[in-house]
Amino acid sequence: MSLEIDKAVAQKAVSYNLKNVNDVERALNSKVSIFSPDTKTPQQQKQAYMQYSQRMLDTYYDKDSDGVVTKGEFEAVELDGIKKMSEILGFGDDAEVDAQARQMANLFAQKMDINSDNQISYKELTLFNEIADMADGAQDGVITAAGETYSSELFMKD
Ligand SMILES: [Ca+2]
Ligand SMILES: [Ca+2]
Ligand SMILES: [Ca+2]
Image (tube, rainbow, N blue to C red):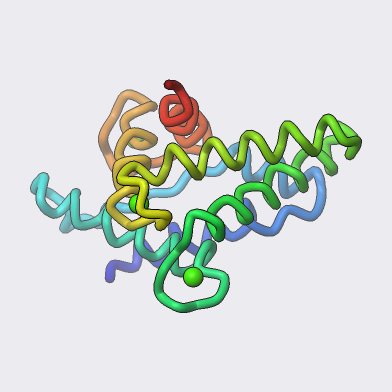
């Protein structure tokens, strides 16, 4: 495992522990770099995406640490993030906001589970991260939060 991937995964912590407006700002402006100086060939790049994706799942989504991220675990983490963000930004916490957040997290988890086996695999997250990386115009291992948003919008389209 490269130091770059360790560092990138650690840098994402703020996005999964939102506490105040500063955190939200940092999360929305986040930018990680997952390629090392040795990441050169397309195979090495693929390896970096896969390792980063597996580490992200292990670190932030596998809540019961059983080595598997269920669709439910993924959805719960995403819902928590959406709800915290709307709470901090003052979008309120009424039934409508709550229903929208639930719908969004549910749809995202459903689309992320490409093969519909009720688990989110590193392969599925790898595809997401490859698209997120390319969204800034360069497949250079630099993934921005804006790229992730672009990728999730693409995933959630029919
Ligand atoms: Ca699990
Ligand atoms: Ca799956
Ligand atoms: Ca990029």
